[in-house]
Structure formats: C-alpha cells, structure tokens
Image (cartoon, rainbow, N blue to C red; front, side):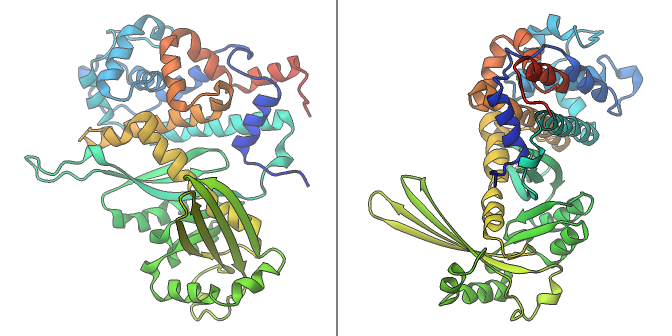
Length: 436
C-alpha cells in the first residue's frame, strides 16, 4: 500500500518531482488580480467626504508589504513609499501612498473576515487543482486532521492605561494539517470564552472526513456533540480539569491493559525519534472497550479511549516520562490515533510559532483591537502562501520574506505564479509530468 500524505505534502512532492520553482513556471499576475478583486469588495465604513485613499488599495498595500517583510504599520508605510512605482501597476493610488496612521485607523474600522475566507478559499482550490493535475488524489489520507487552539498576542496588552487594564488580543484558531493553513478564527475576550467559541466555530464548518483535535480545555460534551453533528470525528485530550474522567481513563490503561493491547491488531504503535538532545520513545494505545464508562451515553459518538506514553532519554542519562489520555470517536486504529495526536501540535508549531517568529505577532503592540485582529488575519493569509511555496525555495519562511524584499518587483510575481493552476499545468507538461 502506498504511503499516504497530506495535501500540502503532495503539493510539495509535485513541485520537487517536477523541478517546479519560481524560476521555472510561466509568470503571470492572475492571483494578484483575483486577490485585488476581493480586496475591492470589502465594505468601506468611512464617510466618502473623508476618503483620500481607496480601501482596496490600502488592503493590497498591507498584503504586499507583509509578504515583503513588513510587520508593523510604520514598516508598511516605508515599504509602500519605496515600492510606489511598482504598486501603481495594480493600484490606483489617486493621492499617493497612505501614512502609517492611515493604515492603523482604517484597519481598526473594517472587517476583513470575508476577505480572509475568499482568499483562503482560492488557496485551497489551488492546492486541490494542482494535486488533481498531478493525479495524486489517491495518495491523500482518507481523513484529515483539523486542530483548534487558542493564542495570545502578548504585546497588545497593557497593565495600566487611562482606561484601566487592556487585555491582550486572544484568538481561537482552527488549523488544517492537511492543507497547512488556518481555516478560521474567532477573537475572544477571555481564555474561558474558548469553549463556546470553539463550539460556534466548529458548528458552521463542514467536518465530513476530518478528525478534530483539541486540548483539554475544549474536551467538552458540547464540543463532541457539535463535531459529530458536523459529520466529523474527534480525538480530545484529557487532563485533570476533567476530574474523575481523566483518573478513570488513566487507571484503565494501568496494569495489564497495555500489554494486552500490544498484542491486539490495530491497538498499538511505537515510534522512536531523536528529540531535544536525546531519544523519544512514544507508545500509542487505543481501545474500543468503553462499556465500563458510566457516562458513555453523555459523550456523543464516543467510541474509544487512547493513551500516549512518552519516554525521553537524554544523552546525559536523565529520563523524562509523560502520559496523555484521550477520549475519541474513532475506531481501534493506532495509526490514525497516532497521526491525530501528533498532528495536533501543528497548530502550535506551524501556525502560532510561525506567527510569532516569522511575523513578530507576539510583539504586535496595536492596542486598537480591530486593527490588531485585521493585521493578524493578513499575516495568516501570507503565512498560508509561504507554506505552499516553501519547499521550492528551500529556505525558512522568515528568510523567504527577506529574500523577497531584496528584489520585490521581480520576485513577487514569480512566487505567486507558483499558485496559479494554469502555470503549473504548463510547467508539468513542459517537463513531462504525469498528467492524468
């Protein structure tokens, strides 16, 4: 049986196998013009008598600037001033380029939710289209992993202001490991608001063919119900906040249970990997023996319990152990359980960490929360684009942005041409790619 992959992995495989890079694709600006069209559709709340700069122009400048290594309003203004001649190729700019205050004020008074959804939709269709061209649909995992988790942008908070304490921006994100991008987000006031926010987000999503993973905070009966009603499955982490349930599941896996599961087909998997100056051994156990659980009927779709036993053996001889327990709606399939448990960390490592490291989101000091939200949304769109082309550059995303900024006018269209299905089709045909 051929090894299965995520859609993002197969996209990268297609690029690598056929030598597709920014230098080898037919250059065009169709993606830029499509994104510009949707930027022009964002509702403008400003009074016409005060408008000097078109809203679509402002949004596109921020988009271009964030791609070109700008993270803050002042950097965006500097980028636009230097690149004004090139920007006029796509933008009207009737009164030149805006100041940093204009970006800050405008982005604090618009809603970019629709722009995020349609732009993300373009990227999702692009991935599917390229995979279809390469005939790799059968290589994709039958079920994809979608993770939900919260992030705090610490820099946007203040201990004391004239209006009192200002809470840092808190975002609940839904991340697709399959596509390698954020699919949705909800901005919340308090950490405890994550639970209803998660249920609201998941309730409007098509979850068919997905396994939803979440940390212990979102291990809730209501969340499980929403996922099952959305035709999805769940693998939810258990911790002490679940009280008796966590203790019962952990006690179940103690003793002879694990030895029994090792000998049962589909119930056990072991991995050994180098990690943090040592070797990490992980053992995955999953069982459909759930009838002993007195509240089984209260958890919609509950089908199995899982546990991960990790041992980290360091080179200095020290050792660390960790046990994690899960409540699941998937069947006894250790391969699937291992993938869901491991891939959940993609939301932390590939989304939250990248936002902070590559885009300095944690240093976002904008106290105007709508402005902070919209700037973060733009960074997520750019992060999605970078994740798709990363393998062809063979550089970190941070370095790709820097390299792009050095010769922006020549490099940006090359990069975005890689996300045009027609350009990729021509590249595949010219290189003898196996088109279905």
